Image 1 (cartoon, rainbow, N blue to C red):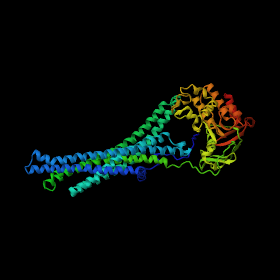
Image 2: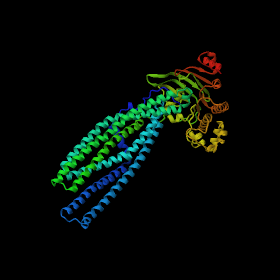
Image 3: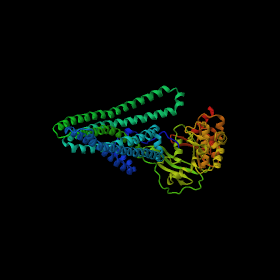
Image 4: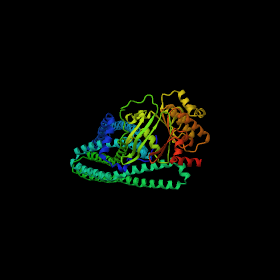
Length: 604
């Protein structure tokens, strides 16, 4: 499709999409609900794992008390120690094994969910790409979309397999640990709980401050990716204008902006960990001092005190980890929000066609008082009218920015008009579905596009049911058969994504073959202006002439031969048609076309 430079589509940037953590969390929950059965199983095995993990300090405490009793009663011997240790030791091994088993099952399930979630998000993004209007592609940065499809989705998947998984375990370890600690020493546990609340408050405050920094970090990274992609694809132009230094300065400046945003985000992210660690150390020291006092007073046994201190670590360590996970989780929510920002955009509006599709199109087209603009207050076209008979050739000429591309975009309903009518064989295209309208047209653009696949697959892109004979016939019409047969596997040769095995001219010929195989009623052509060798250029012109034969054709024309031979010439400027007619009549008119023709002819 043609891309238009002017647009009124609101740019999708993170700065214009303020974070809504409540909404982002809801998106996350809705994502998890796709695997609610698996999540329920994860919660169950995590709970069982935490219970078995919590049993271990208690068994050790009872064993220590049993040995201490032997010592205090002067009944210490190898036999007596074995009698009180063997059974608890077996229980310890059993509890450790089940703790490991439940943890392993939990990790495996979450790894599977993470992989499926990444696949799910990539699918909904790519599906969304096919339904967005052309206005979106006019303005959005390629690097920004790639950042959301790759970096952001990967971050969401990673938080599932690492962060969310660990958060569940931490939650159960904290809750069960506090319950057991309360049973041992409720007053001391209240102090520990108070420190936990303070830790949570510190985490919350720092997380709020880091939230904006993470969003800025992602946004500057997307800008940097877009810039690198732009300079990479335009490398030849950069060198031809000796702009390498300028490009480098721009990239360095963008990279520095990202570095500052990244450092700020990371500083706030890592500030949580030492702050919470300090509070947890205070909790452990307080527990040891007060617990020791209780042991001296006979309120707690030595074994139970040991178990209690282990429970303090069991509770405090998950809090420390959870504080770090929460901030990383927040970053993942921001990434998820960025992904769903795209899915929330309005689709290209489709409707049930009031008029059935045209089964036997002739190709007669007329514009009746068409008005169009990229916004209601900025009309590019105000009153465009013309008629084209079936099987006529129309040459569209005019300076850069005259509206030539916009005109053909309106033909295929890449944009909807603001007023007037566009008729195809007397049928208003607004009353047809976009799919039915676009099936009537074929396109050959200057910027060729070949996907990774065989030569035959590329030619049959518009007709997947085409036979090999039909593909070969289309290739012969497009002057492509000979060079295809010289390839290693002929029509089964694989073309890579960068199409490096075929020249620019050969790519153009393959796209002509693709259009010929589709056999549309109307052909839209954008004549190449790039430098191609004379022989290839002659082949392209021969192929285009064959393609236009016996069908209506609209040509954004650059060659004088095409313009002279056209049945109708539309001269455009600033969005409107200022002159129309054939070559001879426009020369006699002595207007803009005559001046344009004379200048090109003189240069030629």
